[in-house]
Every structure is written in structure tokens, then in C-alpha cells.
Image (cartoon, rainbow, N blue to C red; front, side, top):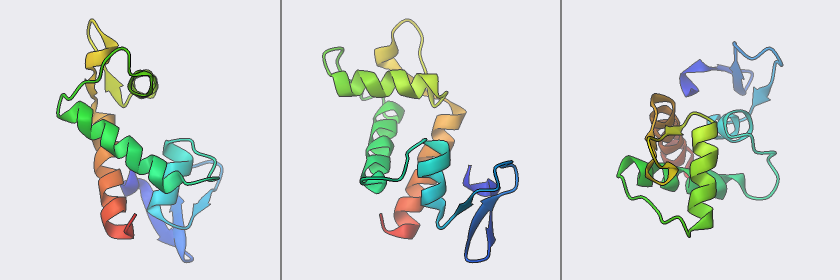
Length: 114
């Protein structure tokens, strides 16, 4: 997803974005455009939470049905095509889009010191 960004005038733009949005950092692009955050509060920490959850799916460290935070994340990730599942949502795995998001978040965490 980050490969779409082009540095321009001290920030970043996505040539495929018809809205003409401008982001200060690649992390801001992920938070606001890809993850759908509004930017209030602490989007950096929530993005790190998303990274940790995606890493759990990648490692097949599945949560329990009783863990509502885990189940909410799974339902959200499946809806956004970051994950998919077979007979049970609890045992979801990353899609190509989910792997790409995970790699992009890792890049932002490393390069931007989040």
C-alpha cells in the first residue's frame, strides 16, 4: 500500500486517490486512509495494536471465542479483506492484503519510530 505514495511538497500523496488527500507521513496514510481512523486520540498505538494482532494471525496464535477484543478484530479484519477463514472465524489467516498491511505497518514503526 505504501508503494502507492509519492513524496511531494514535504508530504505524501497517492496518485490513485481521487480526493487529492495529502499525508504528512506514510504512517498517517495508513492510519487515516487504509485503517479508517479519524486521527484523534492515539492512532499510533492503535496501529501498533493492529500490527500485533496481524502478527498473531500470521503465527497462528489464535484467540478464544470468549476474548471479545480478539473476536472483534477478527470480524473487522475479515470484513476488510486483511484476513479470511474457513469453518471458524477464530482461526483466521492473513490474506495477501493482510500481509501487505503488516509489512507496511512494520516499515512505519521502524522508520518513523512509532
